[in-house]
Length: 241
Image (cartoon, rainbow, N blue to C red; front, side):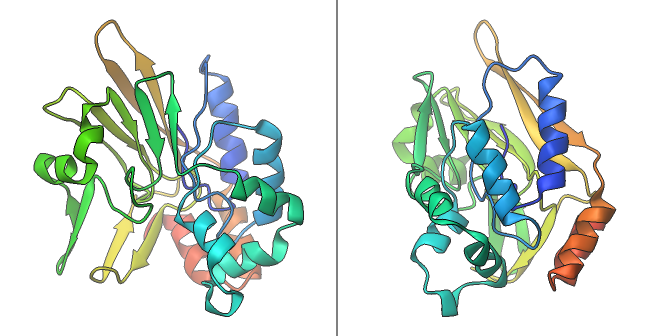
């Protein structure tokens, strides 16, 4: 599982090289693909060439449907770099994707790409979600055997009472950010590594291994600075906001 590349081409290339050494059968991409302060066009070109099973994230939806004058800086950079072919590719991506029958992939939750599934934001900040909160957000989808989500950029997993395993692989390309909805909060991986997750189907359950990959985050930070995003550069170099 990879997620939240956010146009970080160097991080994506490092993760793909690490995946290539793991004898992986299939790689699933959970969205938020090109919006960020880095290399949206080049990242889109590579992902289109790879043609991985991919769902769209909230940033893909925003790129396609938000008026340009209301776009965030990250989305606007991606919008300006996109070709008609890139746009057609994004438009064809599904919000959810079934993989091998009993595995469901999505970005935030199965019904909302902005939902934090494994975290809960309160007035004091973000915390790990409770089992009941996750069950409530999943509804009938909690009966699935494996559920793959992204969006919050944090590596986390949870086994539900239904037996389902829920996994967030963390972010390939953006290890820390802040947001003000529904309350001001920060999300921080704590280190600048590019992250993803390996899943293995055992005899009676899935097993998850989280990976953290080194890459040239200093060069990525310089690119973000050149694109007018010192805030992203700081997050890329430190894993903190």
